[in-house]
Image (tube, rainbow, N blue to C red; front, top):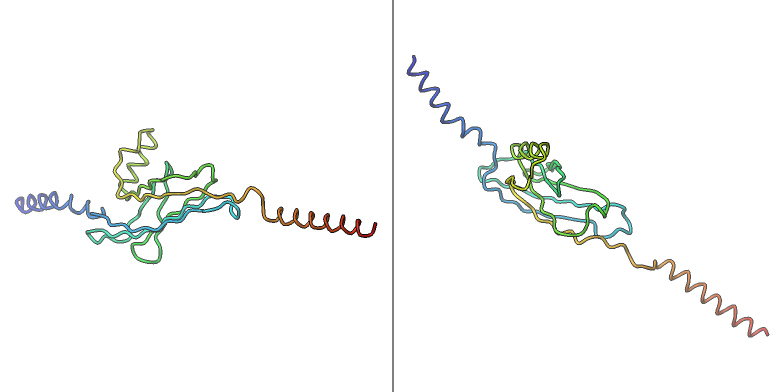
Length: 172
């Protein structure tokens, strides 16, 4: 009986690390699409949306992912399609200026380490993400300096003034 117990304990100790690491995505392959607000004429905020699909070597599906974008942590939302995720970020244009953004993604274990480092005030740059997606936000276009409505109104006023002065000369 003691030999059976020792064998069972040894077997458990050998399989325990394998079963714990079973929830980690191995060799992640990511394909992504991104969108960022191109103009500020019709919107007040800058919006960044990243949609991506994740394929793991060990066929892990529907894992919980978290994104770190410029010091902000966001959960990645699962879409209706398997292994497809999306994150979205909205803020004022001054707080999301144009430039390159590195979006780091973490699984549950990596996210716990990230939150621990943030709470203790340590640098999070040395944490290894599951994968990263690079996003280039070109910035927003605020529109022309002079609005087309203003140009049209001024043109109408000038045409009216010219017609009115010509009418006055003809009647005089």
